[in-house]
Image (cartoon, rainbow, N blue to C red):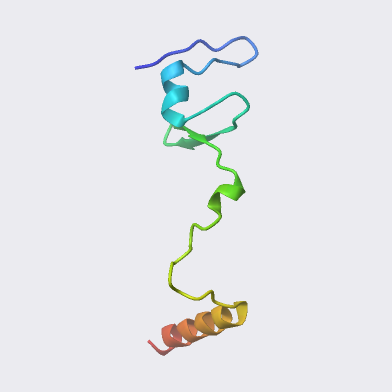
Length: 81
């Protein structure tokens, strides 16, 4: 279990093992998520890191019009149920 001290200004130093586990380097940003009285510390991922996340090799890209049609078709199916 890792510990650190909070200063009068509310600052603390993240232990080396915590920084290593999150892959943190100087200048990186962290996010705090509070759930049921506990805090989770997450490394902020830049939006550029999402590039290609939804890529499906071998499938052609879908246009916005095709997406709109698929959404409308799904909504029509839901209303028929």
